[in-house]
Length: 80
Length: 300
Image 1 (cartoon, each protein chain N blue to C red):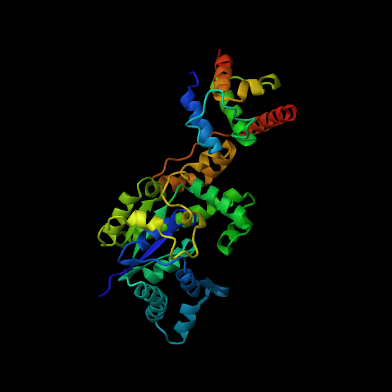
Image 2 (image 1 turned 180 degrees about the vertical axis):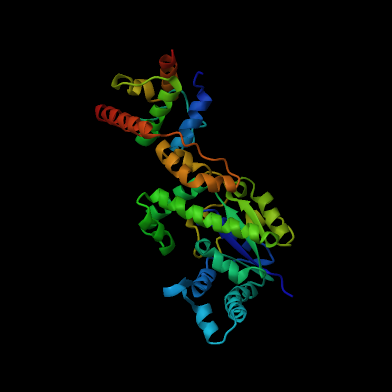
């Protein structure tokens, strides 16, 4: 099942205890400090389980993970 | 005969200070900041079994001196309740209520002293949220009260210690609520924060007090009568649900560990059990991903 934007935002809000109701697809999350390392590790575990794949060092980049839009695109790519 | 006092019981970090402020805003009810009077009385009633099964404590010692247990309890009750009655009188109110969060660690003795003489309002909150909130409190205050320290010395993982404390206190409170069902009402923090008016109406009906328009706004707008209690609630002018389900921000492995401790009690209190899906492999993978993420941070 594809990861939806709503499900991702809800997950990040629960994990990071931040209000993301107005977050834009290109809002920087990790590099801005909105999502800390602990929440990001949770996200990586969540993405692996959701996509059924195992990430390598090449996957863990800001290009793939620093915004809602990038995470959704990365998850969709991984799930293929 | 004057109306019975009201005793609020809830594990620390369960919204008891919020409920205290709401009750104190009622024109008939005076609920002071935390007095520690009932836990003090409970300590007076402390008893232990000495060598060869001999019980020692004030009730037994005074018993040997010719004082009947019922008489000792009545005197202690009059002493403790006297402070609450005098406080209510000074506040120009007809009735007292009392809440001290750490009373939750002394429930059997408080029940022994108060049952049949008060109305109990029992406040429950999700155990994992309580554990997370206690962790925050301890972090900010930099220490433990004696009741919590006992758990910390037994359980090396602080969150497990706080969860164990929640299990014991919530269980004791719910045992009381069920045993004294005519004189006890159980409510939940999550509902109190979601709809304070509805829950307060329920509480006031239970203690036979009329609804009072504007009580919620008055309670939260007042900065008077501030004393011992949750410092955060005094800074808030409205009730919100921000602290509900904060446990979901805990790592999955921590959630699973706490779930093992809390789930039976969560179920008993009507909460959904927390999933226990994390295992050793999850923990290892989490660690590996943390290392990979650390590399990303260095490159950033």
